[in-house]
Image 1 (tube, rainbow, N blue to C red):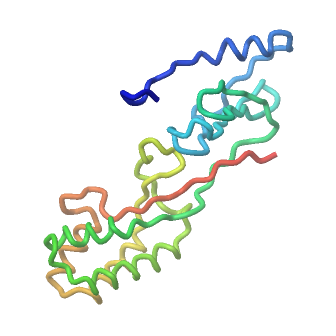
Image 2 (tube, helix red, strand yellow):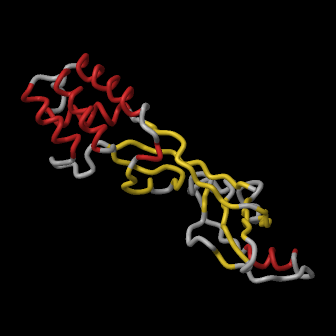
Length: 200
Protein backbone atom coordinates (compact mmCIF):
# COMPACT_ATOMS: atom_id res chain seq x y z
CA UNK A 1 0.00 0.00 0.00
CA UNK A 2 1.26 3.44 -0.89
CA UNK A 3 0.14 6.88 0.32
CA UNK A 4 -1.99 7.04 -2.85
CA UNK A 5 -3.84 3.81 -1.99
CA UNK A 6 -3.55 0.18 -2.98
CA UNK A 7 -1.23 -0.94 -5.76
CA UNK A 8 -1.62 -4.09 -7.79
CA UNK A 9 1.28 -6.54 -7.92
CA UNK A 10 1.13 -9.14 -10.67
CA UNK A 11 2.87 -12.44 -9.89
CA UNK A 12 3.66 -15.33 -12.17
CA UNK A 13 3.59 -18.29 -9.79
CA UNK A 14 4.14 -20.71 -12.68
CA UNK A 15 7.91 -20.11 -12.94
CA UNK A 16 8.35 -20.54 -9.18
CA UNK A 17 6.41 -23.82 -9.37
CA UNK A 18 8.44 -25.12 -12.34
CA UNK A 19 11.76 -24.27 -10.66
CA UNK A 20 10.79 -26.12 -7.45
CA UNK A 21 9.64 -29.23 -9.31
CA UNK A 22 12.14 -29.30 -12.19
CA UNK A 23 13.47 -32.79 -11.34
CA UNK A 24 10.19 -34.40 -10.35
CA UNK A 25 8.29 -36.96 -12.42
CA UNK A 26 5.52 -35.23 -14.39
CA UNK A 27 2.11 -36.71 -15.05
CA UNK A 28 -0.86 -35.20 -16.87
CA UNK A 29 -3.75 -34.41 -14.54
CA UNK A 30 -7.07 -33.28 -15.93
CA UNK A 31 -9.84 -31.53 -13.97
CA UNK A 32 -12.81 -33.74 -13.10
CA UNK A 33 -14.90 -30.68 -12.25
CA UNK A 34 -14.93 -27.40 -14.20
CA UNK A 35 -15.10 -25.38 -10.96
CA UNK A 36 -12.42 -24.44 -8.48
CA UNK A 37 -13.51 -24.83 -4.86
CA UNK A 38 -12.64 -21.74 -2.82
CA UNK A 39 -12.71 -22.03 0.96
CA UNK A 40 -13.09 -18.32 1.59
CA UNK A 41 -13.90 -15.00 -0.02
CA UNK A 42 -12.05 -14.22 -3.25
CA UNK A 43 -10.35 -11.24 -1.61
CA UNK A 44 -8.79 -13.56 1.02
CA UNK A 45 -5.50 -14.42 -0.68
CA UNK A 46 -4.56 -16.94 2.03
CA UNK A 47 -7.75 -19.06 1.82
CA UNK A 48 -6.97 -22.44 0.23
CA UNK A 49 -8.44 -23.32 -3.16
CA UNK A 50 -9.01 -26.91 -4.32
CA UNK A 51 -9.23 -28.49 -7.77
CA UNK A 52 -10.33 -32.07 -8.25
CA UNK A 53 -8.14 -33.80 -10.85
CA UNK A 54 -7.50 -37.25 -12.29
CA UNK A 55 -4.73 -39.01 -14.18
CA UNK A 56 -7.34 -41.29 -15.75
CA UNK A 57 -7.07 -43.91 -13.02
CA UNK A 58 -7.18 -42.10 -9.69
CA UNK A 59 -8.89 -38.96 -8.47
CA UNK A 60 -6.91 -36.55 -6.34
CA UNK A 61 -7.07 -32.96 -5.14
CA UNK A 62 -4.68 -30.14 -5.93
CA UNK A 63 -4.54 -27.68 -3.05
CA UNK A 64 -3.29 -24.17 -3.73
CA UNK A 65 -2.53 -21.84 -0.84
CA UNK A 66 -0.20 -19.05 0.18
CA UNK A 67 1.08 -18.46 3.69
CA UNK A 68 0.62 -14.70 3.49
CA UNK A 69 -0.42 -12.01 1.05
CA UNK A 70 2.34 -11.46 -1.49
CA UNK A 71 3.95 -14.88 -1.11
CA UNK A 72 3.75 -17.32 -4.04
CA UNK A 73 1.05 -19.94 -4.21
CA UNK A 74 2.19 -23.36 -3.01
CA UNK A 75 0.54 -26.38 -4.54
CA UNK A 76 0.32 -29.89 -3.19
CA UNK A 77 -1.38 -33.02 -4.42
CA UNK A 78 -3.64 -34.72 -1.90
CA UNK A 79 -5.55 -37.97 -1.97
CA UNK A 80 -9.32 -37.64 -1.73
CA UNK A 81 -12.25 -35.79 -3.20
CA UNK A 82 -13.62 -32.29 -2.71
CA UNK A 83 -16.89 -32.12 -0.78
CA UNK A 84 -18.91 -28.89 -0.86
CA UNK A 85 -21.82 -28.92 1.58
CA UNK A 86 -24.44 -26.35 2.46
CA UNK A 87 -24.05 -26.11 6.20
CA UNK A 88 -25.88 -23.03 7.47
CA UNK A 89 -28.65 -20.60 6.63
CA UNK A 90 -27.95 -16.97 7.45
CA UNK A 91 -30.57 -14.28 7.86
CA UNK A 92 -30.07 -10.55 7.66
CA UNK A 93 -32.59 -9.04 10.07
CA UNK A 94 -32.03 -5.56 8.68
CA UNK A 95 -32.77 -6.77 5.13
CA UNK A 96 -35.97 -8.49 6.27
CA UNK A 97 -37.14 -5.39 8.12
CA UNK A 98 -36.29 -3.16 5.14
CA UNK A 99 -38.15 -5.43 2.70
CA UNK A 100 -41.28 -5.42 4.87
CA UNK A 101 -41.03 -1.70 5.47
CA UNK A 102 -40.66 -1.03 1.73
CA UNK A 103 -43.62 -3.33 0.94
CA UNK A 104 -45.89 -1.19 3.09
CA UNK A 105 -44.47 2.29 2.90
CA UNK A 106 -41.06 3.26 4.28
CA UNK A 107 -41.26 4.21 7.92
CA UNK A 108 -44.86 3.22 8.66
CA UNK A 109 -44.56 -0.45 9.65
CA UNK A 110 -45.08 -0.80 13.42
CA UNK A 111 -41.87 -1.85 15.16
CA UNK A 112 -43.57 -4.53 17.27
CA UNK A 113 -45.14 -6.13 14.16
CA UNK A 114 -41.80 -6.07 12.33
CA UNK A 115 -40.15 -7.69 15.36
CA UNK A 116 -42.87 -10.37 15.55
CA UNK A 117 -42.45 -11.17 11.87
CA UNK A 118 -38.65 -11.36 12.12
CA UNK A 119 -38.93 -13.83 15.02
CA UNK A 120 -41.46 -15.96 13.11
CA UNK A 121 -39.26 -15.83 10.01
CA UNK A 122 -36.15 -16.91 11.92
CA UNK A 123 -38.02 -19.77 13.58
CA UNK A 124 -39.31 -21.01 10.24
CA UNK A 125 -36.02 -20.67 8.31
CA UNK A 126 -33.81 -22.22 10.97
CA UNK A 127 -36.04 -25.29 10.87
CA UNK A 128 -35.25 -25.82 7.17
CA UNK A 129 -32.48 -28.01 5.79
CA UNK A 130 -30.00 -25.82 3.88
CA UNK A 131 -29.65 -28.58 1.25
CA UNK A 132 -33.33 -28.24 0.29
CA UNK A 133 -33.20 -24.55 -0.66
CA UNK A 134 -33.19 -23.52 -4.33
CA UNK A 135 -30.03 -21.60 -5.19
CA UNK A 136 -30.67 -18.37 -7.12
CA UNK A 137 -27.12 -17.04 -7.52
CA UNK A 138 -23.71 -16.78 -5.89
CA UNK A 139 -22.77 -13.84 -3.71
CA UNK A 140 -20.26 -11.85 -5.78
CA UNK A 141 -16.78 -12.08 -4.32
CA UNK A 142 -17.54 -14.92 -1.90
CA UNK A 143 -18.11 -18.36 -3.44
CA UNK A 144 -18.78 -19.85 0.01
CA UNK A 145 -22.09 -17.96 0.22
CA UNK A 146 -25.09 -18.26 -2.12
CA UNK A 147 -28.49 -16.58 -2.22
CA UNK A 148 -31.33 -19.10 -1.95
CA UNK A 149 -35.10 -18.99 -2.24
CA UNK A 150 -37.43 -20.53 0.29
CA UNK A 151 -39.39 -23.62 -0.83
CA UNK A 152 -43.12 -23.26 -1.55
CA UNK A 153 -44.06 -25.06 1.69
CA UNK A 154 -42.08 -22.53 3.74
CA UNK A 155 -43.61 -19.63 1.81
CA UNK A 156 -47.10 -20.95 2.63
CA UNK A 157 -46.26 -21.05 6.36
CA UNK A 158 -44.68 -17.60 6.11
CA UNK A 159 -47.88 -16.32 4.51
CA UNK A 160 -49.86 -17.67 7.49
CA UNK A 161 -47.56 -15.77 9.87
CA UNK A 162 -48.05 -12.57 7.85
CA UNK A 163 -51.85 -12.90 8.06
CA UNK A 164 -51.67 -13.44 11.83
CA UNK A 165 -49.35 -10.47 12.46
CA UNK A 166 -50.56 -7.81 9.98
CA UNK A 167 -54.00 -6.55 8.97
CA UNK A 168 -55.47 -7.74 5.65
CA UNK A 169 -54.42 -4.83 3.40
CA UNK A 170 -50.84 -4.83 4.73
CA UNK A 171 -50.64 -8.63 4.53
CA UNK A 172 -51.50 -8.61 0.80
CA UNK A 173 -48.68 -6.16 0.02
CA UNK A 174 -46.17 -8.00 2.21
CA UNK A 175 -46.97 -11.39 0.67
CA UNK A 176 -46.55 -9.90 -2.83
CA UNK A 177 -43.12 -8.64 -1.77
CA UNK A 178 -42.09 -11.96 -0.20
CA UNK A 179 -43.30 -13.95 -3.22
CA UNK A 180 -41.44 -11.70 -5.66
CA UNK A 181 -44.56 -10.59 -7.52
CA UNK A 182 -43.92 -6.90 -6.84
CA UNK A 183 -40.89 -4.83 -7.88
CA UNK A 184 -38.47 -7.28 -6.19
CA UNK A 185 -38.26 -10.37 -8.45
CA UNK A 186 -36.13 -12.38 -5.98
CA UNK A 187 -38.81 -12.22 -3.33
CA UNK A 188 -37.85 -13.50 0.09
CA UNK A 189 -34.31 -14.87 0.08
CA UNK A 190 -31.76 -16.11 2.59
CA UNK A 191 -28.02 -16.63 2.51
CA UNK A 192 -26.67 -20.18 2.56
CA UNK A 193 -23.09 -20.78 3.65
CA UNK A 194 -21.19 -23.62 2.04
CA UNK A 195 -18.28 -25.48 3.59
CA UNK A 196 -15.60 -26.98 1.38
CA UNK A 197 -13.41 -29.83 2.62
CA UNK A 198 -11.29 -32.66 1.29
CA UNK A 199 -12.45 -36.16 2.22
CA UNK A 200 -10.03 -39.07 1.95
